[in-house]
Image 1 (cartoon, rainbow, N blue to C red):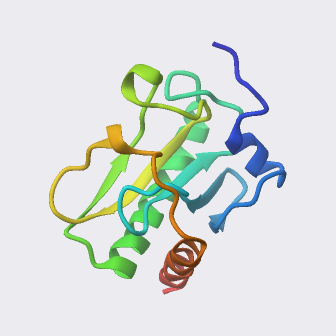
Image 2: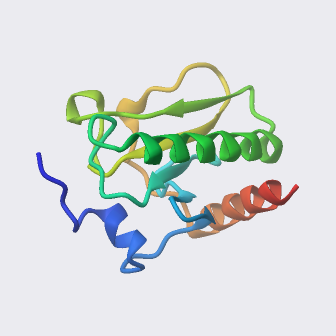
Image 3: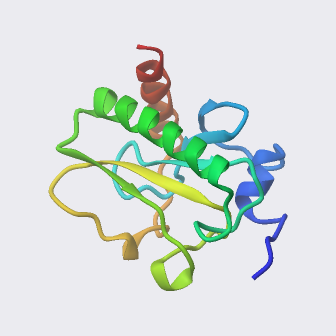
Length: 141
């Protein structure tokens, strides 16, 4: 599979599509998942054009995971969940639906998550905005 520069995350990186951005640095962009599994579900993506775990460079991978840890700590402070699920799905057989490397950071209540139900119901603009603000505030703390 070759990288599709018109995937939704690439368009977000080019500001061609809007996103509820939580944080951005030289290597990563963090924003709310529009169809969250739980409140506060967000994504950390690389700025490198990588399809999945098998194609990302070691440097970009390290940067994404460092940022994922930072965002997970913010999610823990902002939402006080029972746990925080960190998930990276590689290839469609594992549930990947956007073929640009990304990590899910999901505040979690009530046990393990089932990613098979992911991307079915879009969250309200109000809820996404409120969750993004809570995470931005927690990142500053």
